[in-house]
Image 1 (cartoon, rainbow, N blue to C red):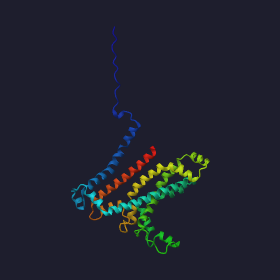
Image 2 (tube, rainbow, N blue to C red):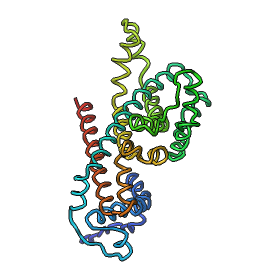
Image 3 (tube, one colour):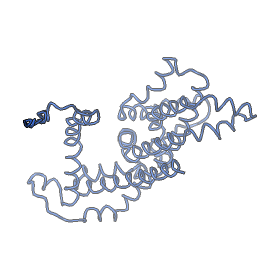
Length: 314
C-alpha cells in the first residue's frame, strides 16, 4: 500500500509594510522627511545660484524672467577683478588671525577651567557660553559702540588709564580696521572651541598624568607629550569648522565697518554681497563669486581632512 505524498507548502509571506525592519533601516526611514526638507531648503537655492552664475542676470532680467546664457563669463570677470583678490587677501588674514587665536585661547582657557575644576559652576558656564548666544549682527553692533571714535567705551578706558592722549579710530583706520573686526568675531565664536577642547580634556585618562609625574615629567612635558597629542584630533576638527565659518564672515563686517575704510575690510562674503545688491546688481557675477568661495572652502577642508587621516593611520 503506497503512502500518499505530503506536500508542505511555504508559509505565506508577510506584506512588506508588516515586515520587521532593522534598526538602521528604521532610522533611515524616520529621517527621510527631514532629509527631503533639507534637500528642498538647502538644495534649491544652491542649484538656482549655480544656474544664475552662468547667466547674465540684472534687475531688468529679473523683471522679465529671461536670462541670457553667458557660460563661464561671470567666473572670468570675478577672477579678473582686482577687488576680488583684495577681498580674498583680507579673508585669508582674517581667517589666520581668528582661527589661530581661537585655538590657542581655547586650549589655555579649557586647561584652566579643567585644572581649577570650576566648569561645574553655573556662573562660569553662563559667562563662557554667553557670547555664543548673541546673534552675530547684535555682536557687531555692540562692538561698534565700543569702538566709537568719540564716545567709545574702549577709548574712554584707555584715556582714563593714561595709555592714550587722543582717541583712536579703531574701525576707521585702514591699518587697524581689519584687526578690530577680528576681536568681536573671536569673542563670539571662542566658546564653541572651549567646549570641544574641554570635553576632549575630560576624556584623557588621569593615569597617564600620574605615571608621567612618577617618572619625573614636569607640567610642560606632560602637556607636550600627553595633552597636546591627545587634543590633535579635536583641534583639527575645530580648525576645519572655524576656517569654513571665518571664510564666510559677514555680519560683523556689516555692523562695524561696512567694508571700509576704502577696501580695508572687504572680505569674500562682503564682495559677493556688494556685487549682487549694489548697482548695477549683477546677480550672475555675485553667484559666481559665491561659488568660487565655496570651492575654496571645500578645498581647504579636504586638505585638512587628508592631513588628519594621515596622522590617524600612521
